Image 1 (cartoon, one colour):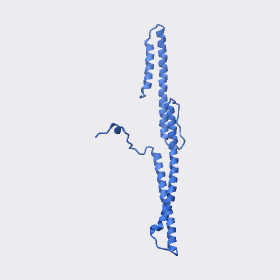
Image 2 (image 1 turned 60 degrees about the vertical axis):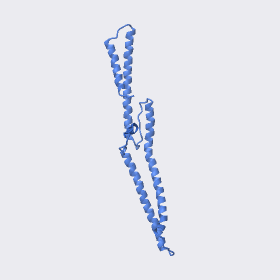
Image 3 (image 1 turned 90 degrees about the vertical axis):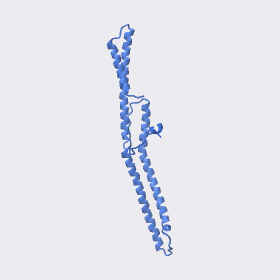
Length: 201
């Protein structure tokens, strides 16, 4: 069966590393936390197991027990301690890293709303160390190009207004429009058409 229009139009993400530098750093940090947790678990387990075996073998009232009975308290304690520390480290790391994205996203949303309301004078700036700096450059370039096109359209509209006012004055005075007067109207109209031609609505 063929694909439905909805499934055919659904975008498929094939590139996983979009913000490569940030994603690689984040993966490296999380991997380091996991490795640290593993080492910590092994270290605590070694210390506790060593103490437990020492007490068992050197006790005057030593009774033979299975290895699991000896290791269970050490395993539980080391797992709990390492899990707690790794969870705390992962929470702090995630909060810190997400803040470097959340701040820029908040700024982009506010500025995009302002641009949508017609403010093309905005220049988006982020703090040093924030992620998505490349997106900031693209957004500022978009705003600059829109500002230039709107300025061209506004200048062309003003030229067209002046040319039409002159033509209207000639007609109201009972005169005839000259080819030069019509040419001024046509040129201003063409400039306005070119300025607006780049927009798709």
